[in-house]
Image (cartoon, rainbow, N blue to C red):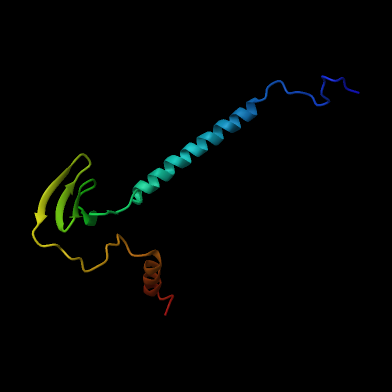
Length: 126
């Protein structure tokens, strides 16, 4: 029988053993690594934010170097060409007549379309 203040289960010397602390540390490191990897993927795929915010929108862009781009921006009813580098943005010229794009503003074709083209080239789909 046990006395009133005693428990039948043995108590461990520490609530957080060495193995538990190691597992906790590795789990925390894995979660932090996952967060950094996810943020890198979002930046790489440029999913960080909306492309249009009311009167200001990016219409199209072209890369002219590893960290340089020329961007066509719609501001209200007018359009402006902007040069973007890693450290600055410079308004190149406001356009007198707006440019109308013949193709939609998609950065790349959908995966299904690219897969279909690839399969047609290889002769797998008729």
